[in-house]
Length: 276
Ligand code: SAM
Image (cartoon, rainbow, N blue to C red; front, side, top):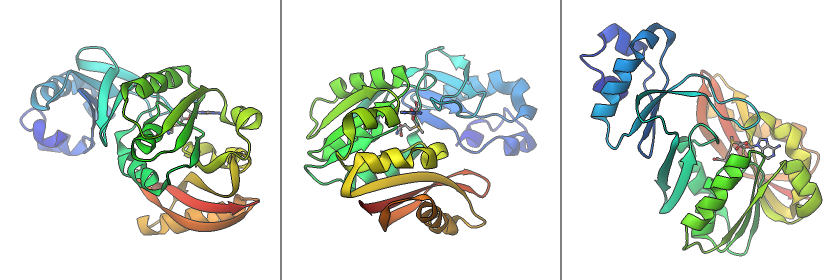
């Protein structure tokens, strides 16, 4: 779609150098542009602003997602320099800030999968909950209680706003700002029927906290990154990795390759039922 919109603006050779995907989040477009085309970023931005609807702003993603808060630096290349927008998914409304707090539209299938697994009455501990995407979609579908923890104050504040925006939830979402390990230790030990660990770079470091948060018989959704020659091997490799690093009796009840995050590099999830 990005390449098609730019036909006539870039040569065929240039178009083939452009990354084939861009993210549309509400009326914001985010593009990654290879160094060889950076001199044309303004014309790329203006063309996208005219040809994609709805579009209010086009940003060039200058850095990968990085740091504790998993955020990225964005530079406006067309339209308004405003990184806040509203995004809709599965009948829920979300206020997001695509620069100040982590947000990815590419996790929507996984959000739906998790909401489908949750049973009415469950307590869910979302250790790295961001602006509340997984938590609010779960509470829209199920009568559950979700603790949405995040270290980034902007993410926790947006989560509170998103709870207010979505009035017809079956369940309850509670936004807690702080370090997940500390919050679990002080408030949530053995409370979770289910614990989500969507900080794949640091899952091993937080696994003891996730185990501590989860009741015996509860489920941990352990996300990680795996190198694999073939995409179909990634889920199995992550299962083997989890079984090596966990120190609790675990039955693997599910899991999948969530998305590719680089060449031969995948984000994966293991669903582990633990017995303490
Ligand atoms: N689950 C959310 C989503 O899918 O939109 C966010 C996932 S994002 C990959 C990871 C989140 O973990 C970020 O919002 C970051 O601020 C948060 N984070 C990083 N370190 C943390 C910690 N020690 N305790 C709690 N949250 C943390």
